[in-house]
Amino acid sequence: MSNNLSKIAVLASGKGSNLDAILTAIKKGVCPVDVRLVLSDLADAGALRIARDAHIPHVLHLDPKTYENRACFDAACADAIESAGCHWVVLAGYMRILSNAFVARFPQRIVNIHPSLLPAFVGGDGVGDALRYGVKITGCTVHLVNEVLDCGPILAQKTVAIHDDDDRYSLLQRMHEAEHQLYPQILADLVQKTLVFNGRTVKITG
Image (cartoon, rainbow, N blue to C red):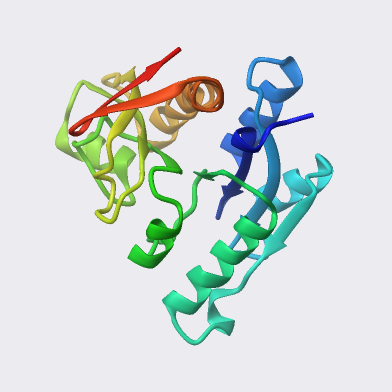
């Protein structure tokens, strides 16, 4: 039986590869989180299919176009998360920018994974930006979400080398491999350990 701190909601807009990695880690017994809700803004998101196949208790599509504005949509999402009893909000390829009001509902309880070594290459195309800039090393970052895009306190990072013959596809495949290793590991730490803050610096301690 899971405790309240282990209950998570996963928000996703895409294929759901990070959700799948989390669920795989749960099955292996190395990530003791309880996925109570998977929510997507897109009806055809692969993450919804993965969630249904895994028999997640709450699988939900909310269409932003049916709400008056972003604030109303985010409020509906937050209500669903709270109704499902989730402590953590886990962003896994969720392509909408969260409103300040949403972030305020879950202070220091929203986690994101970004495909770059933040603070480098913020925004929606971290892989493409790294290739265009010509850096030799990039990676992924797990961070807490605050009101500023991709600027929340960093929890962990994993490097990914860029090869001379890399294109977007080949680099993205290795980026996904790194994300799928790092994200379940950090989620396991979050539900079992304690966050200690010193300004922007965060330590996960036992």
